[in-house]
Image 1 (cartoon, rainbow, N blue to C red):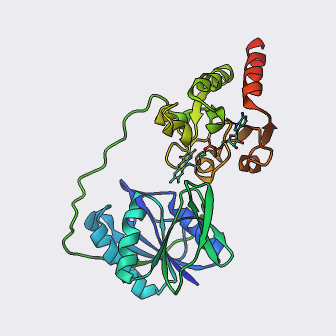
Image 2 (tube, rainbow, N blue to C red):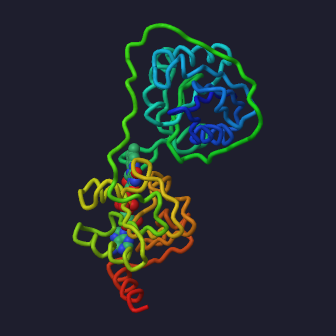
Length: 304
Ligand SMILES: Cc1cc2nc3c(=O)[nH]c(=O)nc-3n(C[C@H](O)[C@H](O)[C@H](O)COP(=O)(O)OP(=O)(O)OC[C@H]3O[C@@H](n4cnc5c(N)ncnc54)[C@H](O)[C@@H]3O)c2cc1C
């Protein structure tokens, strides 16, 4: 089985997420070749074949030209799977490639299953297992779902180029608005999940964060409900954090949340369900009703 992995490059830099593609291929037990529209000064640490096109001439974001380059590499490599990250680059480009090749597309794969791939459904409450009905497929993988794998080595370069007009003109990147809190730098984060029940209980989690000298984080439902600002959201569509201590209060441990916080040094989860998935990555799982446990812990800390 062979994969063609589509690496990512932005603002003159190879993105580390490129190595998650290698993690995916590793779990699949597949051979790899990679394609990157980037620069020779920013090569991945990877000893396989790398189809390299110059971002200076092909553009960092030019779906028309990048599609042509990918189709060229597909012809040369004849891969079973063409694999993208499920990023703004990948989810934009993947369907164009799938349509041009007239093959299936599997979007936002989160795990491998027996002979197939798992993708989230029903707002990630369930997983659906799918596989291409026949032959080749285009796959996008969810950020953080597969471990980054950096095999080392120097790529065997195969240079590609493409020319032509584009239907879209890339104007530039715009930095997101400055956030009221930078969770990326926080050493302690106490996060509120849907288990807090209502907006009024955010203050209870905030009080624990304050007692620990940390910042308030939140899972997506808490943000979607408007209880906490989006700048506090942790996860694939929020911030990726790596604090020394992460306290998850009433958070089940969906993969999209874990992707944002699993690099924390020490994780304490407070959950009334002893089987909540967050228990699989938590260093300590406190099985308790947070409505009782959190105020008691905050009061105890305040006395110290
Ligand atoms: C494309 C996409 C992107 C996403 N991005 C993100 C993201 O960036 N961040 C994110 O967090 N989610 C994200 N999600 C949503 C994610 O899939 C989950 O739905 C979400 O993380 C669940 O949040 P939760 O754990 O707070 O809620 P739930 O899954 O509802 O879990 C609530 C938990 O609270 C516990 N609980 C309830 N009451 C109590 C109590 N009194 N005491 C103690 N425990 C209690 C329950 O046992 C349960 O485990 C995304 C989903 C999709 C599809």
